Structure formats: structure tokens, C-alpha cells
Image (cartoon, rainbow, N blue to C red; front, top):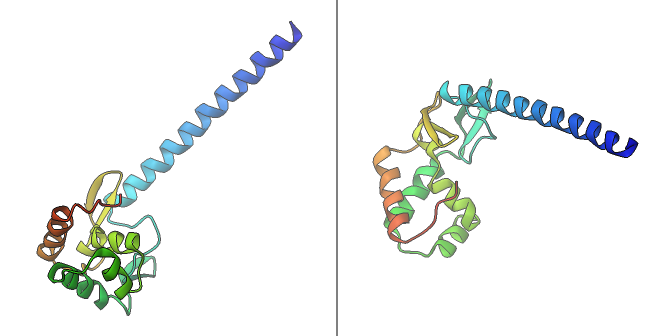
Length: 142
């Protein structure tokens, strides 16, 4: 019976720990959603941007982003050849081509919010690239 009581006590401790961790996770998620709604980025800056004074700003290589989008839209190279041409992995290229950050937006938790940073490409160009990715059957990275 003593062993059974020990297991019950351990079980109660674990339940309390799970409740605590769930609460901590929910609070962290709420703070991240709030940050996204304020237009702030939650991760490291994507290619073409840098952090300056706690803000996302275009980096020296930001002009490459529009060139990559335009070239992809107008070119018939395979993803493999295109990624190699720009010294990127295929997944790295997909991340660039599907990243809402370049539209001046923040995507978090399945929602898209207006960002506080400068847009690097037009919405029209972004949508044309998304259409091409879809036509080619290229799956997006979430």
C-alpha cells in the first residue's frame, strides 16, 4: 500500500507540473500573438533584413529579394537549378518565395498581420510567384 501512495503522490505532482507548463505555454503564446498583432517579428530576421534598434530593417542584400522573385517568375529553371544559381538550398529558396515578411507583413499562428517594417516586394509580384509555385505543384513551407 505504501508503494501505491507514493505513485499517487508522484502522479499528483506530475499533474500539477503539467498544469503549470500548460499555463506557461499559453502565456508565452499570448505574448507572441500580441507581438505579431503589433507588427513585430518573433524570429531571426529573414534573408534581406537585419535587426537594428529592435526593428526589422532592409539589409545591404535586400535588393536580391526582388531579383529572386522576378527571376523565378520569369524563368523556367527547375527549383534545383534556380536554388543553386543563388547559392541557396531548395528549402531556403521556398522559404524566401513564400515569406510574407517581404510584403511588410508578419505571419504567426496561421494569421497575417501588418508589420512595422519596410516591404521589399510588391503584392502583385508576390502573388504571381505564389501562382507559379501552385501551378508547378511546389509545396509551401509553413
